[in-house]
Length: 146
Image 1 (spheres, one colour):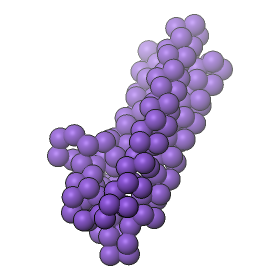
Image 2 (cartoon, rainbow, N blue to C red):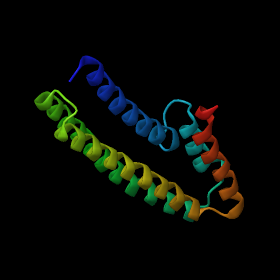
Image 3 (cartoon, rainbow, N blue to C red):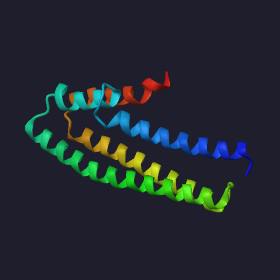
């Protein structure tokens, strides 16, 4: 594999991994002031959830945290397999392609399950809360597109 082709393979894999990480981080992971933490702030402070809503959303978050950890571990394992395939093939060969495809599948599952989690939390909300939640989710997904 030429150096240019090798660089392109690495760049594509890094880009796809970055996109998946940014999506998850912006939507769900609280931390420094990002759109994802704004969603967290809205959900847990601004929407004035009642006790039942807080309990249901807490259960959803705990369940999703476990699933997210499992999917992220799968992504890390896929990256290890990709690195091993690259070391063996030194080309855009069948093992490298299979490892990239596996990684993309895992990223897709993580994104789909993240969205399912967002929709599950939305179902707990009253219509007025859901409207504000929808605006925050849309904002978190579109602010970087500007």
